[in-house]
Image (cartoon, rainbow over all chains, first blue to last red; front, side, top):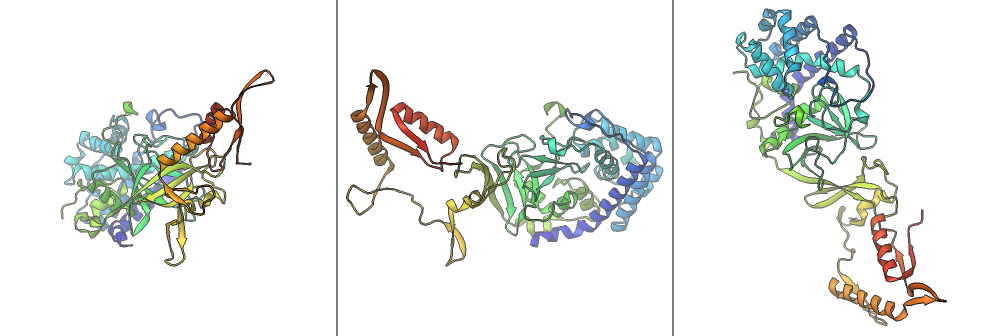
Amino acid sequence: MKAELYDAPIMPLLRQILDVQREFRDIVIAELPLPKKTGAIQSYILECERILFSPRLFREICIRLASLMASHNRETDFISLIFSLEDSTLEALATTVQSCLEPDLVAAMEIAVRELRLHKLSPLEPSLLAEFFLAAIVPFYTAYALQQAPVGENWYRGWCPVCGQYPVNGYNRPEDGRRILGCWMCETEWSFSRLTCPICSSNQEGQLMLFLEEDPRRRLQVCDDCGYYVKITDCTQAQAGCDLQLENAATVFLDILAQRKGYRPASHPHRLTREMR
Amino acid sequence: MKVTRREFFKLTGLAALAAAVVGCDWDKDPVISYPLVDAKEVTTICPYCSCGCGAICYVVNGKLVSVSGDPDHPINEGALCSKGASLLNLNTVYNLRTHSPETNPNRLTKVLYRAPYSKVWEKKNWRWAMDRIARRVKETRDATFEAQENGVTVNRTRAIAHLGSAALDNEENYLLAKLMRSLGIVNLDHHARL
């Protein structure tokens, strides 16, 4: 397919980052075991709880990721910054992100970077530092989510039951065609109505789907009521579902096309606050 | 090259980080000029029997292209029987000459009327048909209406019967039953046998 030309530049790096994240997720689970919780979830689990965090492990993940970045682009020098930070600063970074009132974790991380003045220690942009530290903290979130009792089958809300983030993509699962949405942060998957917008719950007259003729399996579900979109991959003809993290990167062309038409990604619902949910 | 997180397009998670590090220039890629196809997923109820299974109709550029079971529907949870699975063929048939699906050319799209003892079908409009049906129902009912039998109030007509189609859903059958009862029709049945 022509649009897969897009995937080529970012996929190798993305796969390597994912490998590092998943390797450290298992290490975090082994080193920081969490008792399983049962019972109903009110809004989402991490609204009242905190992830288990280790500055030592965080530093190790950062170093691994930083060397990956440097191998792809010498100008991305995160390593000197990481070595200049003390454990207390890394701990403060994790605490600030989680206690930030901003529900969008990307924005929360950028606020944390600016509050701790990390951008003054590096020539890189604060937003890029935020993305980097977010990638490094992901294993703590995925480890936390994996240790929870399965919540995805009985969760009928548009946001992640574990960390509260809105989804960036999902798929129609092969067994029965149900829509599975995935959290881009903690990789939790949950089922959600196929014809309902996860942001505003609108389902009037069906949802508009947009796709390229070259690849009708990958679609945009857009909501004309709220203007947000989610990327959906149709796996009903496939043997299994898909890795939503890889699929997110493979469908970047859909993000571009949707945003050119004025839609916004559901994963960044800037107008929504926790109180509005 | 300055490493930056591209703000023009909002990417999420690792895709955003990888794109910033690798330095993709999305604006120069031809894919952004590709046209998007408009499609819509709308729900419907299978009309074949009184189970009322849910189905999702997939409409591309205003044309129905596929129908599948609705996984969120509490009755069928995504499954359809063999008859329901062929719902698309209510509208679309496969053209053996062109080897492509097309709207069934034999679908009736106009009211057809064949007069008693006539051999030809005449095209009529809906207004004519509705007026005629209403007039004939009224005439027959008024001529055969029984108010009492053996001193018991019955308020009925036995000259008209109504047989509901198996293709009617529960709600349509409910409304039809109310209408027929209000006319005094007692020979009333439906077609679905499950």
